[in-house]
Length: 358
Image (tube, rainbow, N blue to C red; front, side):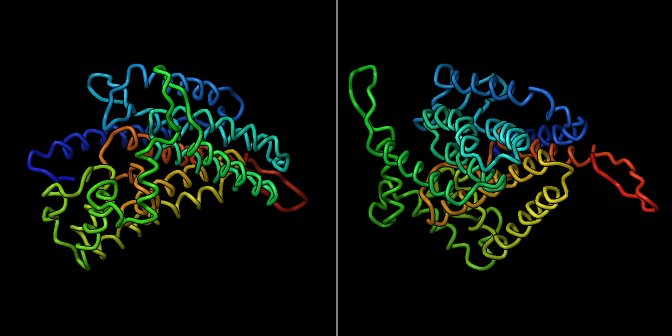
């Protein structure tokens, strides 16, 4: 990020956010999270985030046609980011308490309603990318919790029906005019994804310039600070939505492989903690955080290389912005905190000493 522009505005601000995120990471190691399983903390957090999301269209700032952030003076808050963490927390507690009954389809419906509230509020901003991340988090955690195959088919049918409604169903606005739930520019992005070269100068411009940037990096890249696509402003939003393309242009295939290895280590460690968790709640929470980061990573990269529609998502730990950075570090800190506070008690059985984690 330091190499993107001369005055280094993004770099200086991101250094501050990184310091805040790391500080919260260490603070997240302190609490004993077993109280979350027995209290209503997650539900209260859910209600608080719903309230904040409701306020976004009323008091939020409009950026690139979307109202996603609330200006708090010194910084702006994008509530869709902490909403993802709160959804993971709520679903982890819900599925952990009903793990033996997950085969009952009503639990799929109830958990889906929790996610649907967040999805609808974020989608209405409109923030299609974050809304889809929320949907993927719910779907991934349902799979981890143990959904039946026949129920999975029902979920796919519901998803297809909802997408059809989003595409075709009109809604009435205050001026008595009708417009589809899925805006025309969002439809155009999806259609352009199916045929990227159909409108290079229009809807397909961003995706085309992004693939050009990635390809021009070749094996070892153009060098840090020498990315022409971002420097000459051919690549839009190169510090956020297309930061992977800007990185790939400067670092090349070698740098991309290193990035995948580094991210793979993070995911491997999260899966390790999920597999070795002391209970269902901790395991589901760690799995949810893994799904959250994986979805962001692959949706962002897929968007940058033309494999997915342009939806405007960040890549974890890299894209400019404080809300997502704080959320990611806080999530990982909570996973480690849950492992740190596990206790063991000895149970003597015959002549063997067994350990039971509680």
